Amino acid sequence: MTTSSLQFTVPDMDCGGCVRSITDAIHKVDPVAKVEADLGTKLVKIGGAADAATYANAIEGAGFDVENPA
Image (cartoon, rainbow, N blue to C red; front, side, top):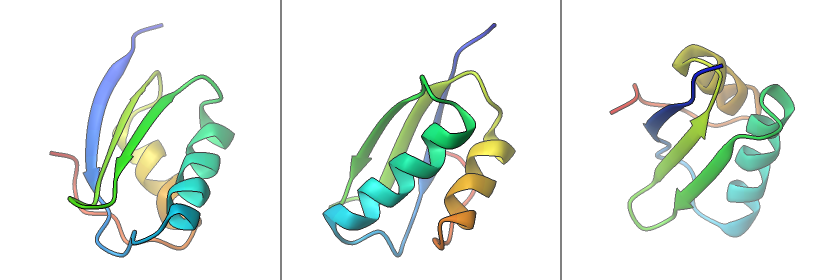
């Protein structure tokens, strides 16, 4: 299993509740993923085994817009 390091811009992430929702959504598809969110830059960094589309779909499923991984 390979681990990827991906970065997404989530423009409507603006509070700790948003971070928790996004983190929970990512952990539903990859329970051991490492998630780091920065409210100031609106960046979510994910280290895990799933692909970018899987993580983006999870974040969007939690109700957030996602820009392509950087």
